[in-house]
Image (cartoon, rainbow, N blue to C red; front, side, top):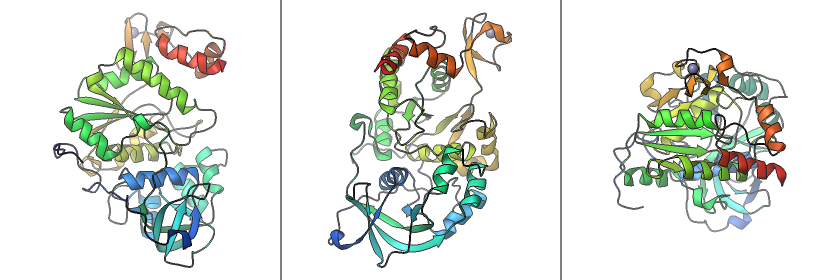
Amino acid sequence: MSAVATEHLISPHGGTLVDRTGDRPDGVESLEQVALTSRELSDLDMLAAGALSPLEGFMGREDYERVVEEMRLESGLPWALPVCLAVDGAPKGDRVALTDEAGTPLAVLDVEGVYEYDRQREAEQCFRTTEEEHPGVARLYGQKPLYLSGRVTVFDRAEPPFPELANDPADTRRTFAERGWRRVVGFQTRNPIHRAHEYLTKVALETVDGLLIHPLVGDTKSDDVPVATRVECYRVLVDGYYPQDRVLVSAFPAAMRYAGPREAIWHAICRKNYGCSHFIVGRDHAGVGSYYGSYDAQLIFDEFEPHELDIEPMFFEHTFWCNTCGAMASAKTCPHPAEDHVFLSGTKVREMLGAGEIPPVEFSRPEVAEVLIDAYRS
Ligand SMILES: [Zn+2]
């Protein structure tokens, strides 16, 4: 850790940035092994780095129950989604080795408890639906039947998919401090950034010191644009259209849960740990299909007192290019009818890119479109 002072940045959730990395203890080979799913591995890596502060491990029953029912940890601190490890049965010893899917030990977990959970209730409360067509619910229903809780110590961090974008909360905080940023807005994305999202990141940046473009790089649905393609899109966009000293592109290692409103809260809390004082919440944040209303992920912030989350949400409506305004706008700022607006459906955009056609510059930067066309071709 360098000597750069970071006290002027927002405090981590709960006050202290957790660090659950440590040395490999003796005797790991002889411990009972628990293999983690890719979602659980993403959570483990975030626990190690403090991205899930104040959590130090997979949740115990008291935290879990209160999170599911009230969006709070046992301590009362806001927390929106379970961070749990599903297992088939109770381990025999009081310590287990956590491994990746290939069986390589990455961490140990000191067992605190094993408990039953109700999948339907978790689905109803966290996803607002019990339908199996919902990808987050489907994953929940496919889980093993018990939750194993306990503090983790991670001695082998999985190789990050994009090492140059791998910054832990301590790293982003140091970078913000080095650049003299105090007010920093975080932008979560799992899509290529077109003009609409470029616009809202820049509107937000107008009012703060810096912008963290924080693409999620953990598991997404198979029909989302692959992460390697997205990362290339972010590179060409930021190189061409953002001031380099006001923006940081960094990977967010979480897996998508598609929990809509609750995930918006969870995403905001995680970004607070990365040092963001502000967080962009657009239309249907972390949503999927038509499970959530367009602005449910904004309304849910009203369920907390502002000081409780500390990080400030910045809400945005659907944005577009308006031919009459001659500018990017939204229903909030443009008085003109829909026919003046450049609107392309997701299906239309995919069709154009698939045919090697560059969408209008009012919709997408040509450099971004070219990356996507190349990806469709290969
Ligand atoms: Zn207009």
